[in-house]
Image 1 (spheres, one colour):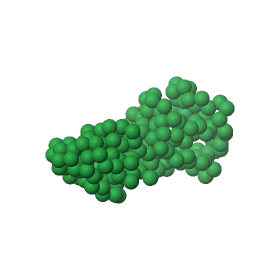
Image 2: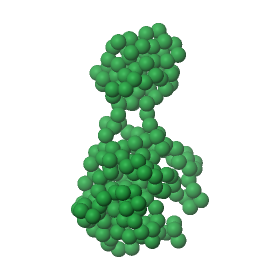
Image 3: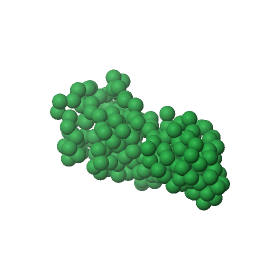
Image 4: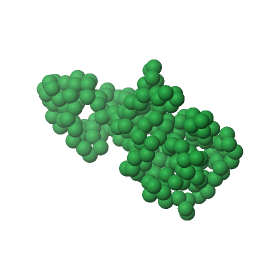
Length: 212
C-alpha cells in the first residue's frame, strides 16, 4: 500500500519555476610534486600550478609536496592528498520496496525522504512542513496533478537541502496539503536532482553534485 501511495504521488507541475541552485568550484588532485600540483577543476579543466599561482577559475595553490596540496578554493583553504577531491556525493541503497530512501535535511532539519525522479520538486506534506518550521501559509498556491487527482500545494523555497554529503541552496519545493495519509515521506524531486549526477550500479545509487 505504501509503495502504491508513493508511486501515485509523482508530481507533474508544469507551471513550477525551478530556481538554479548554488554550486562550489570542485577540485581533484591529479598529481603532486614539490611546490607543484596538477588539478582537475570543475571536472573539465586540467591546471598545472606552482605554489602561489591561481587558476583562471580562482583556485590557488598555496603549497604542495609529494603527499598533499594545500589549496584555496571558494575562499577556503583545503589540504588534499593525491586523488583527493572536493566533489560532494551521496551513496544510497535500495530498500525492499525498490525505493532509494534516505534521511534528508531541509533547512538543516532531518526528514525521512525518498528519491523520486518523477517529482518536479522536493515535496513535503503540510504536517511535515509545520514540524520542520517551514512557513507556507502565505506562499503562492498551485494545483498539482497526481494520480489521485488534482491537489492543492504551496510553492516555497528552501535555503538548503542536504542528502549525504551534498548540500544545494535555494531549492524549490512544494508543500502538499495534508499529512502522512497524503504524502507518507518527503519526495526528493528534480528541483534537487537536477543539481546532481545519478548513477545506479546494482542496488546502489550514487549521487554526485553537478557543477555549472
